[in-house]
Structure formats: C-alpha cells, structure tokens
Amino acid sequence: MYRDYFGLNENPFSIAPDPRYLYMSERHREALAHLIYGLQSDGGFVLLTGEVGTGKTTVCRCLLEQRPDTAEVAFVLNPKVTALELLATICDELGIDYPDGASSVKLFVDRINHYLLETFAGGRKTVVIIDEAQNLDPEVLEQIRLLTNLETNQHKLLQIIMLGQPELKEMLARPELRQLAQRITARYHLGPLSRDEVTAYVAHRLSVAGVQRRLFPKKVIKRLYRLSGGIPRLINVLCDRALLGTFVQERNSVTLRVLGDAADEVFGQTRGAGGGRRAAGMWGLALAVLVAGVIALGAARNWQPLMPQMAPQPVALAAPEAGAAVREAPPEVPIAEPELDVLSWPENLPIEQSKILAYQALFDEWGLSYQPSEHGKACDQAQTNGLRCLYKRGSLGSLRSLNRPAVLRLIDGQGREFFATLTRLDDETAEFSLSGQNLQVSVKELELRWFGEYTLLWRVPSDYQRDLQPGSRGSGVSWLNEQMARLNGRSVGSVSSLSGVLLGEVKAFQFSEGLVSDGIVGPQTLIHLNSRLDPAVPTLLDPRKG
Image (cartoon, rainbow, N blue to C red; front, top):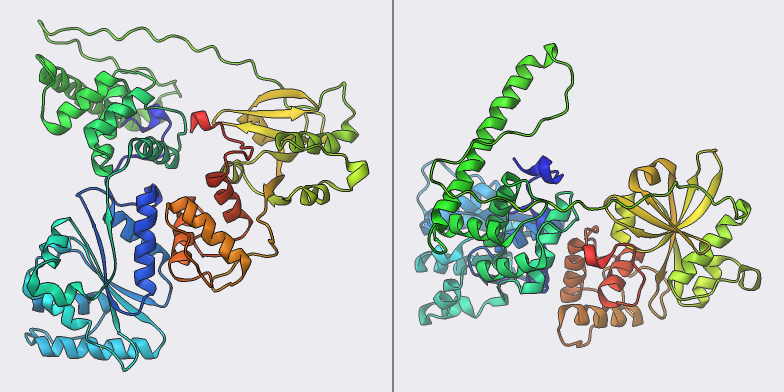
C-alpha cells in the first residue's frame, strides 16, 4: 500500500525470514560463524538459542544458502512429534524410502543408517536442522541423541543443529539429558540488538527494499528501540505499521506520534485518554484508503482502453465523525532543491589533460599528491603508497557497494570523452571534482553520460601478494585473523590456515556485505573489510545519510 509512496521496491519490514534482509549485527555474525563451524565439524550437536523474534531462523536460512553442494540437509519445522514421527520426517526430507504404515523405530533407524553410510562413502555430509527445538519431548531428544551414535570407526555420520528459545538451554541442563548436552560441540545465544544496531538494522532493510533516505529520524529510532527491546521481529511489525500511518498522513518521515499510535495498535495499549481512539481512527482511515485504492485500481483497469493517460490524483479522505478531535498536521516546510550542474568538461580546462587531473583529484581524496611525470603511471604511484588500483566495469550499484571515490570515463553533450573523479553519491545526486572545481549533477544525467568503467584506489595489507583461498597459510592469514578478531570483538588467538571458525567468520562477513560468500579474500572483500575497520579511508557515500 505505501511502497509506491516511499519509492520502495517491496515491503522492507516483512516478518518472513528472507536472508536478503538479514542484518548481520555482531551477534548475528557470531551466530552464523558458530553454525558454519558446526556444519564443518565432525558430528555431534550445534545449539543456537535466542528469544522469540531475534532472527534464529533467518540466520539458519542464511546458513542453508551457503552450505556446500556436498551437504544433504533435512529441515524439521514441526518438532511436536513422537520419536517415530520424527524419524519418518527425517526420511521424507532426505528422500529415504520406507514401507507405508511402517511403525518400527528399528526399521527407520536402519534405513537412515544405510543412507548415511552411502552418502558418507560418496564424500557427502548429512545435517538435520530442528527449528523450535524447545518443543521436543524428552523421549524424542533421546532418540535424536541415539541417531548421533551412527558412525564409522573414525567419523560420525550425522550432524544435528537445534534452534530454540532460551527454555531449550534449561531443558538440556536436566540430569537425564546430560549425555546429549555433552555432545554439543558449538553453542550460541542470540541476544537482541543494541540501539546503534537498531539504527543500522532499519537503514539496512530500507536499503535492500530500494530506499536509502532517512524515513525514521534519530529520535524515532530511540523510541523504537525502547518499544521493541531490540527484537527484530517487533521492530519489523512496528516499522510496518508506522510507515502505513505516515503514508495515511502524507508525511515524508515517521513521527513520534505515528510510532506511538503504531505501538498502541501492535501491543493493544493506549497512551493516555483518547490514545486508543486516535489509533483506531488512524488505522480505520488507513483501511478506508486501502479500500478506495483497490476500487480505484479496479476501475482504472476496466476503463483503461477508453481513458487517456492521466496523472494520478490524491485520494480524498473521508471527514472525521462528528465530535471527533481533529488533529491538523503541521504544514510541510518546502525543501529548497539544489541547483544542479551540467555534466560536461569545463571550458577553461584542457580536456586532453582530464585523465591526469582526475587522478590528481582521486589522490587528493586519499591525502596524497599525484605527480605522474616524476612517479610514472597513477597505479604505480599508488602502489608506492600502500594502495592498489581496481579497474572494473559495472553499475552505480557496484560503486555504492565498494564505497570509494573513483575515476569515471564520461562523454559530454558534444560527444567528447573525458575523465572526472566521482567523490560523493546519494540517491539522486552525484558530486565530481574537476581540478579543484566541484560539480553536482543528477544521477540520471550521470547514468546517461557514463560508460560504466571506473578505477578506484584501495588499501592493501602488508605482504599482500594474492587472494587468500580457503586452506591458505602464512602471514596473510595471520593478518586476516587479527582483522576478524577486531571485527567480532574476540581474542586474536592463533590460526594456521584459513579454515574452521576463521573461514566461517569470513563467509559470514561476505554475506553481510552483499558479497559472494565463497571464503576467498580478494580485493572486494578487503575493501569492505577496510571500510568497517579503518575510519580514515575516503568513502563515496555520505555516512550521515546511511
């Protein structure tokens, strides 16, 4: 309903566990790293617990998207089953045949064991994931434990991952389940988001849905954190209702009052006299708008062949009932639009020098001086300063992802090619530096004038020679371990290769940054890592608008 009004491609606050919308807070990265570690370990149990709505299932679906092709996974969504029904569910998920009406636990266990031996011989791994595991009966938990006894002389054949609410930890602390608890190889409790993480979480979901401007001001985020307690599912519900209320009132951003009304609706509470009536009135009004919109849409579709194209008209809202308090929205203060420049080469500068001038501007962004006549090509001089050039052909989306100033090859209205340095980019405008002059142009004009080629600079680690691959060893891996320790707030420890927990952390980080989570640490991963850990690097996106 409100997507077109705010320019959203889809609903940013759906409660469906879509991995694209997973905001990787420090806690979520650690949770995913634990799951990845458990998936790679040799049998036993992996435990992930957390309050309702903290994102356990979404993290698990993220894990499934990254699982290797050699892993067979059975996902048990309904744990309120008997031991026999659980075994049948595992067989159904893994495609294991069994006779109709089978009622023997031994028959199911034998079939599962035969399947596990075959998949192990083929170099494949089998994992059972059980969601809402706090609902498992003790006898079912015991049957699950017995399944982990299926093994060869050297290897366990089955890995089990259990997701559950905090009660699951209490269950596993019981004396009668101590044998199962002793087999847990990795466990993690997923807590709520901090206030800063709520800010980043809301911005992340809006960005994935196609909008990067601030729809929730800082004071609204502060109230949102208090209302939700940092629980992602509650944040989603409150934000969804708040955007609907904002749309109804035709505002540009969510206000404290609209968020309060949304909370009244969600929690079924009132905030003082008239609070409930105000909330009911707002959502009733929203329903009226929705119905009117559906009717109008149907009419438009029926009459479209007979009607000329017309600009959409605002929907007239029904007058409030007699006696109801009328709350007038404060008048919107018009925002002065900046006067935009034309994206062309300045007539007072020699166009044949555009490439040199562009690289001078790029080096200025890094606080460096570029002297091509003395130091050779730009990329050679960059290397002497601990930087590398990255040349790519892509879109504005890839530039936003890498978030670095870049030299672009452009064409002006007269068909002349020139180079210029892109120094700032937001949803609608882009800034260029041309030999000390700043141009602010529209993004639409940029896309019209740009070939899609760009070159940017990025900082390389010391001793960087080549990409780090899973299994790599050496000083580069030690450096990477230090960076991941800083990022995840853990002790450094020592590692011998890019594997195990470290590899899981790298893949989790790549996924959180929208990169291919293959564990290969190349320029793009290093650039994103640099952005997270080095506040001194120049960026393309304005952090105040993130």
